[in-house]
Image (tube, rainbow, N blue to C red; front, side, top):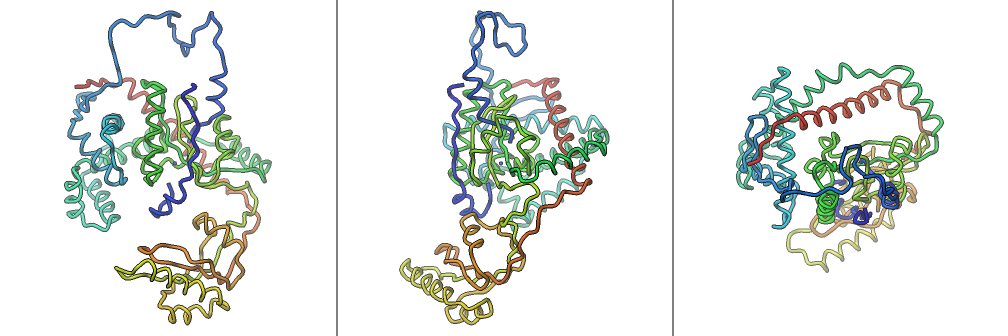
Length: 458
């Protein structure tokens, strides 16, 4: 366990630069506690297996050396399939893959494709079929999300070394698995009124305590050694430092059911988390990553999206009415000229006498004006949150931005302060409990499918 070390990295500036927020099962205390434990001489740490105390390995075997081709219950996954998915993942996640990382990432992709194949096979075994029309509709929506027609998106995927079929296969897997859970799991998940009322009672008793919005990247320690998992986690951490969004990496690497949601665990309280995870989270600041951390069954990276107090009004939940002035710079504008214009914007905004004066000031200095009457302080970048909480109505922030994206100021026109926190509705609590149980059963179902599968590596 000595190799397991906690790393806390502030990724706010990188994430904001790419205009996205970067994803939780884990904890540090368990690693420390386990490393301090000793095993008596007459016991073997065999996880409940009947293993000899002094075992000898016969032969030379490395179960983690896999070629990127496999047959899963007679369904073939080719090396081309792996390469196409890898190219798509790398491009969409803006990843630069070093040569020494490529093989490890191929193994991750191969595991994902195996799970995807098992999910599709199990859905078909239960007479669940995803039509080509449904797959194409989802594909078209993704293309439009990238401001491309389906035909343009086809060409883009081929250009990056992938193929439309790779993405469509992923779409088929997600739809098939979702429908399988809807038909085979969700109808058998029941949450009683007593359970819901108990949750609400605990919420009342927890008023004022902290809760956390977390995201996760989870890797189980199944057939992989601790050193391999920790090395993979460190590679993921390096990609986070480079600005790759957390949710993209969670979808690529995480083997928890939350991976399809970008690793999002939503809001959780300390009593809902393992003790080891609580210790990790309590030492983190919003926007930080912690890990690799050990949890039952594996390791995780944790991302603290936000934190708040249960049923307590938070000033960051205030809703603001804002006017934004933006200065954009033509191509070729020198840095000195840009700084001069930014200073002009700062001087003009510091002399504002209320939001009514903004249009005239903006016209004078050549700035654009945009109004927004429903901005929560919590939804602003952390650097701006502290500034906005201190502003009075009619005052403006200092200029912020860049030469290529423009320089802006925000003028506070009004503020609706939050009221005291209210209990969630019983229906919402019931829905959340049901979803948690569905996710747990889905994880167990996939585990059983892996265990029963016949997989031949080529």
